[in-house]
Picture (tube, rainbow, N blue to C red):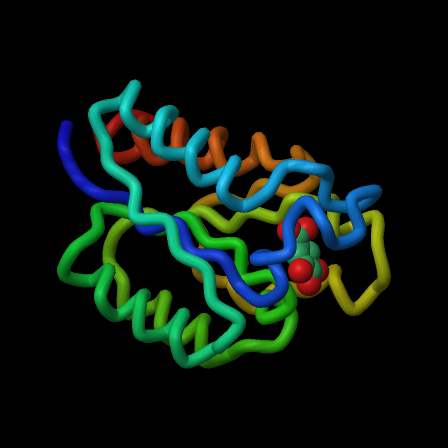
Length: 148
Ligand code: DHK
């Protein structure tokens, strides 16, 4: 199996490790990127790891993934709860989509309980910390190998 997974990160995740570490942990996004690359490598997959605070940029990367990626892992951060535009973009992508949240959004404020992205996601991982990204990559490896 070869191919590239686009791992997309939404607003404020550039501050991972510094921002509310009691909720999001002390690892930086660069740490998560390195771990994701090495996890994907164990499955013979590549990772394109990206972060933006801008909704349009995330949408443009999803469009790019249509041509360049076998799967998408996305932590849309706050856009999870607000963005019909990101949902619409993900609906144009044909491969597997796994939604990741570092925190357990269901244990938090009620406005975090609803996700537009979950209407498209093939799987949702929440509350597993940054390990959630690695679990998502394992799941994609399974799905792209056409197993259940
Ligand atoms: C990250 C955020 O920035 C929040 O807006 C989401 C998500 C939760 C996370 O847990 O990774 O509500």
